[in-house]
Length: 213
Image (cartoon, rainbow, N blue to C red):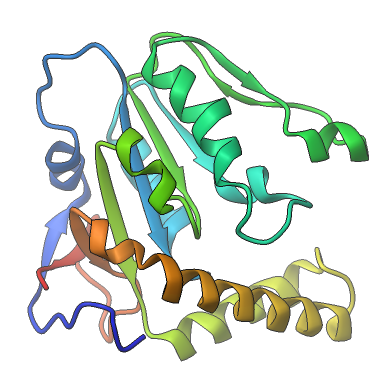
């Protein structure tokens, strides 16, 4: 989008070093709360898994689980009230979203006591309403066309949204809602660091490309 930061200098940073950057030594015993936001298929889930592997006692929360059968981009209250607020108070989290109960989906979103880092990944994870509960935000910047092609191919392969026609229809509806959210909320403005999700050349193994606006 035109309002996204323009980055001309991307530099490789080891994932383990990025983990220390987002989670420096802290006086508080409350867990780090980190959001990884960016457009669909920009690489957020992969980055979250890589960071979690370098951050002992961390838990990854996927906003796709919170958003499951909720109105598009109208679920931030669930993240704030049921996940981040108790986690920051060092309370255990075992949350079954209302849509799960209504539709018979088993399980829950769990964050045990003693968790040292809560990594929330997904479009909308850095929603403006969560700003006061986040210690750091990573914005995964990506080429829109590349990310959209990647995401549609992923969904077609998985078949989770139905056949080809249904998948394309869902994707088009999702992208329209995602663009409206991003244009309105501008989460990159709250980002602590920018990550290149669609580099022209892959970074060295075990690294990501980090940039400054």
